[in-house]
Length: 491
Image (cartoon, rainbow, N blue to C red; front, side):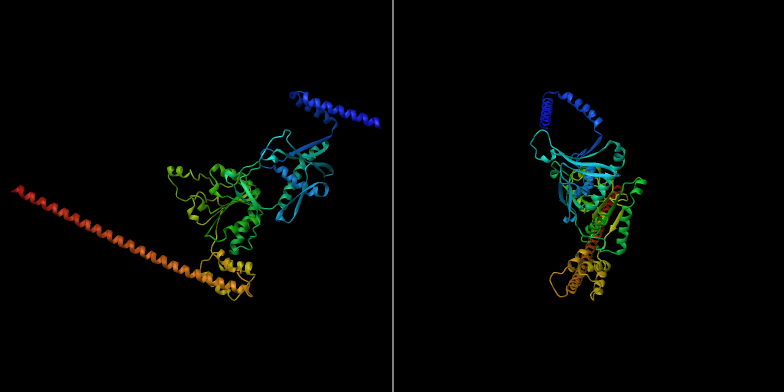
């Protein structure tokens, strides 16, 4: 036995010596050929095939979708089979997701075929200084299976893994609210033009303060859009839909967007146009958005000078120095929402059908909308003050934001519902009085303006009449002089 170990040690030492000599003295030009033929030689005696999926492939700044899907798929298996795991917090920060650690291997089985998945990481062979050392590490998954099952694995199993991984990702993912970075701030080895925070807005269509008929119309439209991917593909149209939300401030446009995101389970990309320097940067922003997302441009009438008045070519060139933008939606599965206050201020080309498929005007708080808010904030369906509030809301324009401000208890009392409703009634009366005073001032100002214009008109008419009189006097005096000269010539 000792002689056998001695021989094995000698053989190992000899192999190590030969490998060192090969690495140091063998010409680099011939090494690829040696590796090529050595792999062919090994394939005759090694019956297994390996498929490698890199974390970063074509785009060095964006993770491979296949790698992410495989990572999610293996996370459901690795927790029970792998010995070394990585933990991360996922959806709502209330649960922990486990995944394979580096250099760990797990087995999987598909239609009776056994496979092996290995998580690996390669480091650079040469040491170099880098501000982003993690960028030098390359992670990848390696799938190993017997060559007799090549058709089954390549044709069916891999598609199954990708599909299941995407389903798991949707189930566990935390939806995000993205905002675009400025050009100066998008840097780093994994730089992105977007930064994000978890999206946790609780708004739903059940809690929105608007008429139930309009809510049902919007929900039906969204549900129909979500289920008609094949139809859009059939008619040759991009699977996207544009919504134009308009109305005064505090009317609930942002809450509407949050409710849409919660209904569809989509991420939100909030585009800040004032930080976009040119059209190229805007296109890059839209390209980096993902599917199942809502692209929002808030207060577009205030962000840019996109009015309905077409300017001359010279003025357009001058204007393009500041904001040469083309507003265009993402050509895949996405919602596009423009959010602004006045529909008449925008260029018709921007809000035409095809760009903005549905125009939604959000109005002031009506009594039906108020009942939703009263249920949400005070948990009441009936009260003695409700008839008075219904009458006052029918006479006064008040935004849901102003109503909500008065429905939130500001102190601890025995009857917070009555106190809040009393505050609301007083606020509506105050708003009604302010509206009356404002209307009187506007009427008075209008009368004064009309009186001023009338006086200016009369003064202008008098001036024109005086000018006509002077002109006639000049004509008469000129005619008298001619008659005198005529008489002298006859004499």
